[in-house]
Image (cartoon, helix red, strand yellow):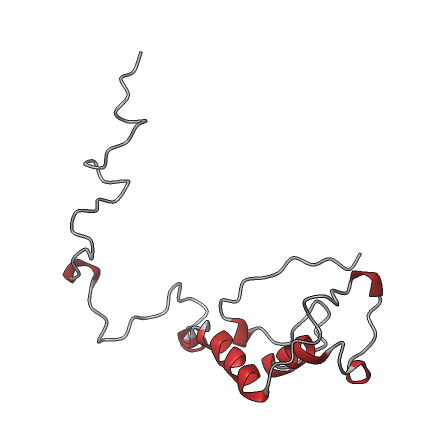
Length: 130
């Protein structure tokens, strides 16, 4: 009881409400919860499983308003807003017209070869079969 798998932060700004029970409406509230849960217990509801609450590393982070805003902005940066413009039948977001094609890009590391390329040295593939 009281344990939950932590989801990815990808597109987190689009997945409100937050927490396992949907009790927090915004990312700002989530940050405030983790910042002040222990320091300001009257603001937050009591958990059903108090023995599972981490009081050592969460609940009194002592972050200021700017630091909280920065964390919310960081999480918002993990959000792909092109998903909001997609139709239900569209599998992938459309690339911007200014996005170069994959074919036009050169490898950043010219000597690097992808592991699936035939020229890539592979101990498995280079071992003679018996």
